[in-house]
Length: 290
Image (cartoon, rainbow, N blue to C red; front, top):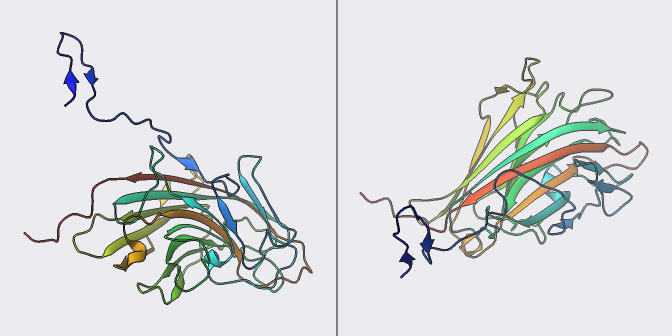
């Protein structure tokens, strides 16, 4: 047992508990080129062609490949950067233990050939979690993410006409769904998402995602009007894939919704993604009995 020094004025404790150094005390920025990240790009949206990801300015500047064979309604099929999700002490979070992840996508700028017609890049950007990233574009890769589908055209600002979207896999991992909100956003360049995983009161894995887009109102604080949660989804799965010990992966994905033959200049998307995670070593709790 640890020994407590009871001398007057001395509140030190020797060998009581375990000291842990906080490595990430608050919000962190997600860099796609972080050394811990792995990048997959099965549709050659960027890294398989002449595109690039540059982060020397402090933001992520994503340039689409000048031409690529295909796009996808599922943003996580595009260029994906992922890494293990860690708590403030640097410990990797796993499914089967409760955790909360908060994220922010900050749209900054778009240039080049962007729009909603053919051979113009219609950019999508999401942030989310999954239990695996190898072959994420397969049906069995369970994923939950939220973000934007950009509908700006010509010289319009990046946040004009954007769609609030989320993508998730069904509970058995056999399907994938992308949902958009019905009303296009007018000038809402910030997206706040929260992923709640546990604690649960039954035997199944339970994860909620909700997110808010934030409108620029032109007031003293241009981002002072958080709108109601328009989208939310529950992901439940009792399979071994979601069992404790499987790492939670956080990822950022950028994808063109359509194919592009290179006849227009590629779009250049500038953004920032921030995140903060906390976890608990305890299990899922009881079975809900009184």
